[in-house]
Image (cartoon, rainbow, N blue to C red):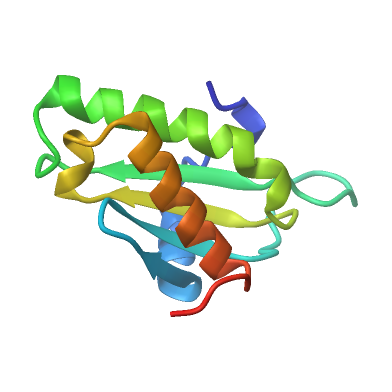
Length: 123
């Protein structure tokens, strides 16, 4: 489970990450990253936490399949939050092939997309 302070919930935050962030596509998913975005709603002067949200449409599959994909993606992103800059907004959009993919394939595509977005990969 993703901790509460690391969840992306508001529509405006999703829109900011998708419209103003960088994007990396892979066969199973697309990752949008808005690095170091400040959160005006966060109290105090400390660095805001990295927050992540997920988009899994009906094209991925039925409700059971969509929820399974979301659970897998939440688990994968939770383990990778420390590698992202503080205050980042991350939106992971599952593509239709994600419903049939196993955990290892999702992890590989997520790692490749994040590596590209963080400057470690090439096109």
